[in-house]
Length: 185
Image 1 (cartoon, rainbow, N blue to C red):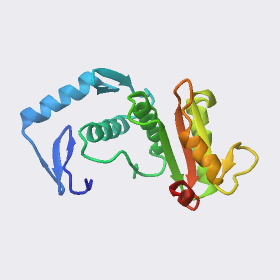
Image 2 (image 1 turned 90 degrees about the vertical axis):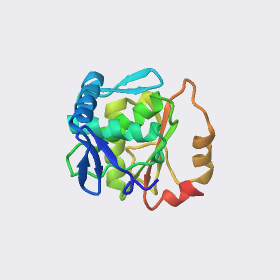
Image 3 (image 1 turned 45 degrees about the vertical axis):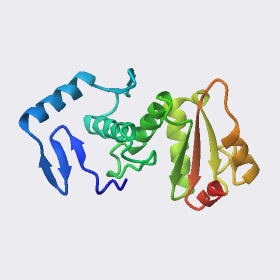
């Protein structure tokens, strides 16, 4: 579904074409539900705690993302379009980790416009998750000696996508826009 045409539900009601609609009673009920869940995502009776470092607007955005996914109202593809320095990378990591824990995904692809941003994402993921907690494939022409496993080789990409790690681990593909076509092949 086109996210622009779907109403966005918030604690204040439904936002459709810039208008907020919803009764005061509905708004109060939604706020009480949000407060009772705190920093948790609920799915099929499972509660996954979100990172305590997230700001309230980040928690709300991530919860809305999972709500849309669980309702089947949008695809499992997403993009956080918020200001620089607003915590997109932490939201990306938290959303990916939570989607993996809820068994929505096994593999996540992170696309960036240039090698510097790919490198920045890798450093943040390694810092936040620890190298043992996820497997990574770096798809770009080169990124320096700092990052192992850099490739655009079709065989290596296919091997990474087909293998099933044991124990089960989140797989993350870091890729420049330019190298993205190799993933599609």
